[in-house]
Image 1 (spheres, rainbow, N blue to C red):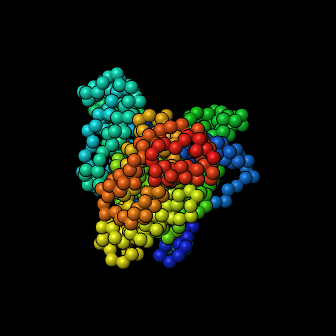
Image 2: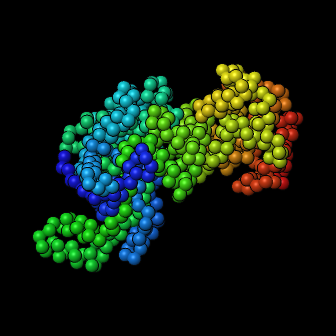
Image 3: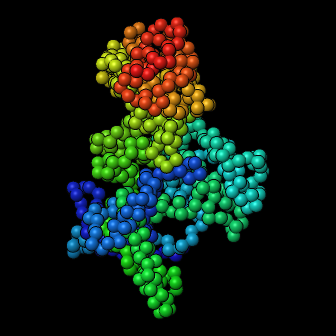
Length: 570
């Protein structure tokens, strides 16, 4: 492996006694782009990676490129970076001047890194983070599905993969569906630890299976891309330094330099360099580097993924807010359980909704949840009719915090009333003694509330919804229609807690949810939501919310016949 070294004089900052050191320096943008990785949270072949940067915004990149094209413009805030591979970094402090030193960054200078090599190195990196992965068994269905997807990409190259038993006429869409179905249940140590909070196990499996397929090919025939994964996409996880904040500034500066190299003046400079004996590619690289900005950098001397995520979330929550869905996805799925624990209290103390993010992540990812894959994640590719992350956060909070259970048009919070009157009697919190402790046990991110919420919404889906036909009036998974939306799900949740409170009922197990719902919905037609209410996209208005709530409550208490459709429109 060819290694290139970059050296920078740095100023050392220690914000508080005992805090992590920060190295402040500047570097050419094209050099930074060689040794920094930008791990993005995105989908590759339908599968999520485990990065935390949002996907690059092309319009923002163009704007910054244009901004950097004017030499009068400067950006004062530095790129925020942290160690990713401490073995590739050396810092030597000046013995005579303790606030100064020299930073050396070593990076593979090879332009063409084999995909297999990238996959194997990244697998090793993840195994170092989560040792339980080493003994993790690869799911056979998932292996077969990815092998079939590879064969569809290049039937000649992957002809040997037909022994998977897959139908040769399978379409790529069907393969993608089988990939989804093949996700493992939490039946081994690694999955049991990680499946609720992280995508690391899933991502690791994707890497291992592709590496396995590539090893079956002769060395000279191994491609640079396989089933959506490329060596370029993997490279961000293997660079010596990780970019915590500032990807658009960095790439905007690089893009501006490349634009100059392709301008008439830049092309003249390249021609002159070639005339002097320089290779054309090297001539272009030289012109780009000569024009590129020197950007300020703040490097945190910490290679802990937990610290990286903490810094990223604080920056984006406190300075440049990002969409709640993506922030929630990143907070709750970028780290393993062991990595998450030490940083959780720091996130809570910083005012970051960590427990909310964990709760919603479970509801959107667990195979047991009726919301699985039906909620926005904040990544490119989200369906416009999926439930908003903030809506699911509100619904789960009613169960977890036992607050907010108000029927539209009423000021009474029935979830809060049930907590005060009946939670202390529940066998689900019997291990605790006083009411405050019982509430703490109930409301933990993985507390008893979770099974209750899963059972409740699963019953709602099974009794009233249609999960197959997304164009049905009672579709489960499409917010355009009557059931699967903020209004109806909030009304049903609040009314259920009103029923529990009025009947003085407690819940000792998830099975009690089914029993109490039988009584709550006694006589109610399962076709209640399966009619054209003629409201369309206007349902999230105060008058409509209150009308829907009034119609439901009155019908549920006296379900002799379905309400008239015009009653839903004020």
